[in-house]
Length: 124
Image (cartoon, rainbow, N blue to C red; front, side, top):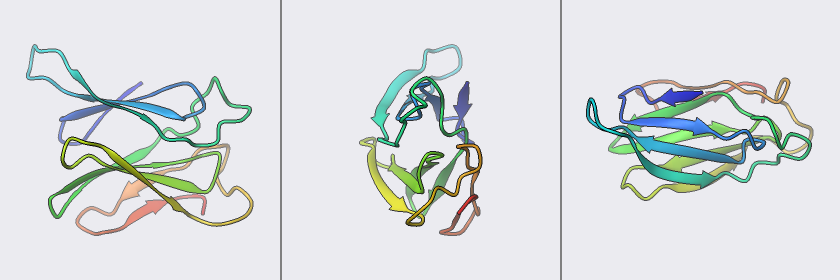
């Protein structure tokens, strides 16, 4: 399924390869084609789930001149933060917790607390 950003500038496509890949499209003007903005390898653990998606939610964040997308792994306690501010996407990671997996059925919900520097991730 395609998932648009709240401002309509981007569309995220999640690959059915264990959630290791995403394609981000930059939308065109009405009646024009979208173009590929980035193909990203998030590197989440996909063992045993190679033909599935391991996440179905993420958050777009626009704050302080920055544009970011937060993806939470459903197969490990890790979050990928993709900075798309300058058109050259960069991925950084945050480990939520060491130890056993805390996600429910390999899925997590992700929500940005709009207007703040905080993102809520369930299952941690």
